[in-house]
Length: 123
Image 1 (tube, rainbow, N blue to C red):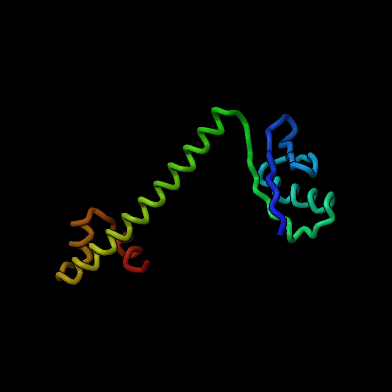
Image 2: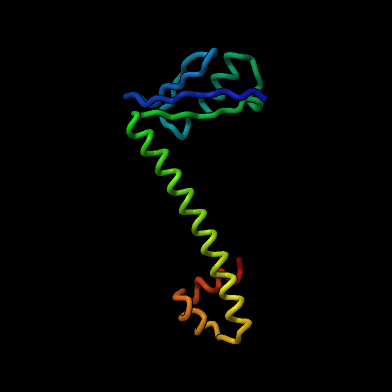
């Protein structure tokens, strides 16, 4: 396996893709950048494309790059919080059901819709 850092910079025609000790190519979109870089690296180094692994490092500007990093962290933290909340809610649903409450009462007590209760009970 060969791991390559690909530094992607936005420019007017798409994304410039720089690969240290390999060269520079481009991609019209960020979504195509990994496959374009993989093809390019494979052609330049004679390494099988399947064994080329890419770490794509997009850059736009210092301020926007920092904002994107903060956004990704916030989304990750929110996802973690949602998983934790779902686990707590699931525990509460099972406990309340064991205590004899009906699904309607559990829904009202927890402030969750009946559909959400059903999702929690399934998952």
